[in-house]
Image: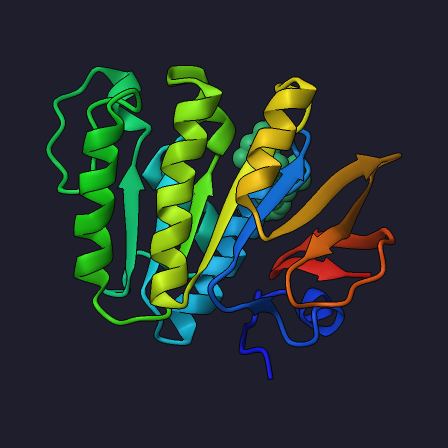
Amino acid sequence: MVERERTGITGLDKILNGGFPKGSTVMVLGAPGTGKTVFCQQFLSKGVREGQGSLFITLDNHPDEILENSKDFGWNLDSRENFLIMDVYSWKLGEEITGKYTIRGPSDLNQLNMTLSDALNDLGKDDKRLAMDSASSLTFYTDINSTVRFLQVVSAKTKYNNGVFVLTVAEGVHDEHGVSTLNYVADGVIRLKKENNKMYLKIPRMAKTSVKEEWHEFKITKTGIEFV
Ligand SMILES: Nc1ncnc2c1ncn2[C@@H]1O[C@H](COP(=O)(O)OP(=O)(O)OP(=O)(O)O)[C@@H](O)[C@H]1O
Ligand SMILES: [Mg+2]
């Protein structure tokens, strides 16, 4: 039987026969404002509550913003020792870099790689959860091929640890080649969209899981993403 990790979204876990297969890399694809960042927070907060090591690699939001926003949903991430944020955002502010997991700039993939190894070591146990928000931003500072090579390393580490790696991709900013190259890294894809003020999710593919490709409506409530 395939071992799975609950996503933290009840309706989604039902469709996925219990959650994401362990060891998988999942791409969450959607236009701006479709819930990608909330998805990452919800997925990691579930891991934190389950006592799993959980790592948020943020490129699009300040870590304080992630923590503040999580509180709105009742996900108290900062007071947990099994939750870490890798800060690939603050360098933009030009402030002195002090944090152990703060990156001087995303174009240095070696530093990114080493800091990632440190963070994963510090989280200790196996079965870790990782979220990178967004992989699209990484392509702006390096290029699509370097990004994919880096993602493949993260994906391999995740498989080795039997964890789950979620990476977000912004729809509409990559050309077709870009999306299909990023798609290539993933074992599963989740698409998010907003239409007429309603939000929808579908699963075009998921490794080791039989899923129907259909849109499911969801809402973002006080407790996060909830299927309607
Ligand atoms: N703290 C919150 N409370 C209530 N609703 C929220 C909260 N944070 C986000 N939302 C809702 O979730 C929606 C999606 O937000 P999210 O930041 O996850 O989108 P995104 O796909 O990451 O966008 P982007 O590509 O711009 O980063 C927002 O439009 C907002 O309606
Ligand atoms: Mg976002």
